[in-house]
Length: 246
Length: 246
DNA sequence: CGGTCCTTGTGAACGAACGCACAAAGTCGC
DNA sequence: GCGACTTTGTGCGTTCGTTCACAAGGACCG
Image 1 (cartoon, chains in turn red, purple, brown, blue):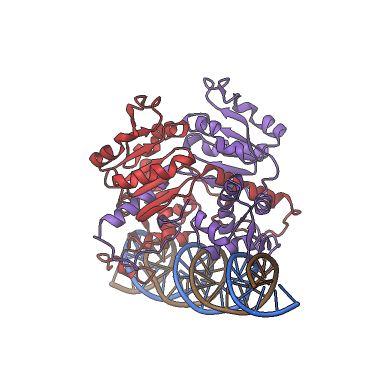
Image 2: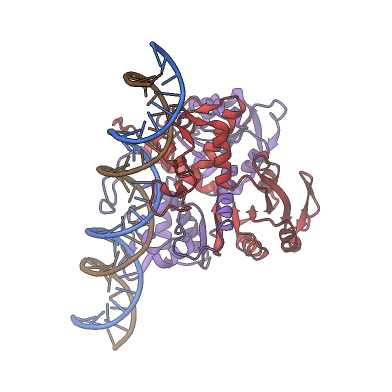
């Protein structure tokens, strides 16, 4: 019991403290749960869910335990209920208007990407510094000039901004987004952004991902075979050998 | 966890055991070092480099120490030399032909993305299951039908594959890539991939990134102003408040 | 209504990663 | 050639995350 207050979490000073590592996995669980719900599954065990997510069942249970005690011993978790609880924890029960800056190849792809709209996110405005792109219609949104950024962001109440500009422009765009009131930034530009306290930045860097894979390739190629059948656990760097039934 | 178990500590520098967390940062250091080299800087201290990368200097020094002792006490690191050493460690001294499967919006953007070509990676072939896309010319590459995948991958010796298909097709494509000899996969589809041992998978999921940001927004919005201190420190989840001079 | 079986929730051990602080090692000025 | 100064490399304690193993809790059967 003691559901009202999620205090008794596995950790200590866990008033409102879901570990970062857990938060990063919740969206994955959520996606799987939604798929299960859609196919009519009403309950799921930690073992099944963990297998689908590619994690150990104990980890999954601990992750979910940070949200509260939403399972039933001997049975498992109610899929619909868990979907709701995880969504709520992630803040997906509300609508998040997002703005995208930089409508080049990547920006176009992002604006068209269905995955955004599907889960509470809504592409609300597009911006580009290039006058030739301004006015262009992308997915029924007109590309706006940078001058419009502050007022439009303010009016929309957009709290999340996506940067898809060249690296050189990223910091400037970031500053303008922050000045306009954006507090969370998803950065696709290969640049390290400096932001004031309280602003969150996550970066997605395609080049870095490839380089990490290259490292993996080289490590496996250079030294002779690694006979040791050490069952390399599922890890962070690269996920090697996953045999779940998706 | 990747594949090998390392000796322990930075002490055994040369050993084949660079921690995952370090490997994930090396490409970032490398990018900064290249920028420094380009602007004519010949030496750099750990303090400066760390500031540019947004990490603590001690962490940077420890990261570099895994590669060897390439610094000079009292002076710093030779930029050109370090570029070479990091590149070498990451396996970027050789050419990596990559193949992209799924030439939709995202696939297009990836094929055109300059960041790939710049660092030892070369887009070598494009594939799509849709007959209407086959034959299309993207960045002087003709989109090939899936049937060509195995022979072309074999001929190119491509070890890295990029999946930019819808989620439903991802596992099938993954299986075909692996069967064709690809051992490292960069997956943009929102799906958990099952792969045999020895194959590395990294995933980039735009929707998940946004959801993590939404969590951050909600956490900061719900409980009034957070005094300080108690907040989860600057961790991995989101980078908050970075004041470096990029 | 009691017993048995199943699955959750979690305490505790383990391990990886981080940050501090400092000795070692080299440079530069004189 | 020597001493002061600078910056690296790293031992160590701390924090964070993962895994194990098991007791507690509940469903279901007879």
